[in-house]
Figure 1 (cartoon, helix red, strand yellow):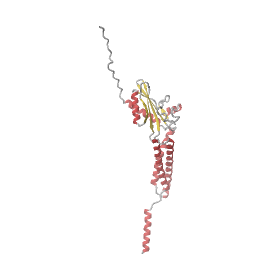
Figure 2 (cartoon, rainbow, N blue to C red):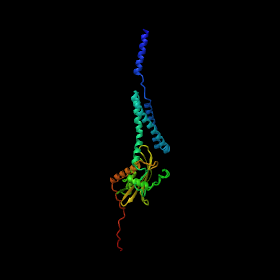
Figure 3 (cartoon, rainbow, N blue to C red):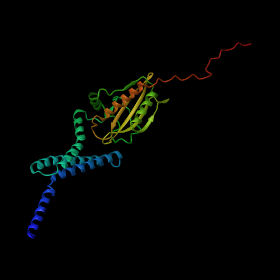
Figure 4 (cartoon, one colour):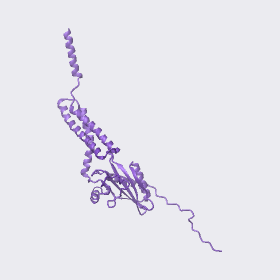
Length: 291
C-alpha cells in the first residue's frame, strides 16, 4: 500500500512538471529585447544631452551612435531567434518581436536621413540672397569658427539647383508691417530670439536673429531675417544655417520656405496701414491788409 502511494505521488509530480513547468526560452530573443530596450534608453539620453545643451555636440552624437549599434544588434538577434524558435519550438517570440520593432524604430530615422543625403546636396547654409546674404550679428559668437560667413559660390550653385523656389519675398506692405508679421511668426514657432531691430530712421533694414531647433534631435540652427524697403512695399530675405555637420538634409531650405510662405499669407490678410492724421494748426494763414 505504501509503495503504491509513493508511486502515485511521483507520477503526480511528473505530470505537474510537464504541465506547469517552464518551457525553455530562446536566449537570442532575450538578448534582442535587452539590446533594444538599452538602445532606446541610450537614444533618449542623447536627445536630452542635445536639447539641454549640457555637453558638446560630439558626446551627444557618440551616444546616439551607440544607441544605433544596440538597435542593429537587436534586429540581428531577433531574426536569429526566429529561426531558433521555429526549429526548436522555444518560447520568446514576443521578446524577439519587441526587439525587432524597437530596433527598426531606432534605425528608421537615420535610414530616412541617409536617403535624403543621397537626393539632396551636402550644404548646411541656405539663403534667399546668396549674392548678399543676411549677416549674423548677435549670434556671431554662438556659431563655430569658420561658420560665420556664407560659404560662397559653390554652395549657392548647389542651392539654386536643389531649391530653386528659395528666393526673396516681395510684399506690398511697408517694412514695419512685414517686421511685425515676421516677429510674430518667429515667436509662434518658439524660436529663441537673440536680437530684433525694427525699421528706424537712419537704419535701412530691419533684422531678426533667432535660434531654431530641429524637431527630433534638437540641433540648433541659426536664422536671420532681413526686411528692406522697396518703394511703398518691402522685401524679405532669410538665411538659415546649421551650426554643425556638413549636410543639413534639407532642413534649412524647408525652414526658410515655410517661414516665407507664412509671412506671405499673413501679409496678404494684413489690414492696410492708416494714413497719419494731419497735425492741428497746420492750416495756412492768409495775410491781412495793413491799416
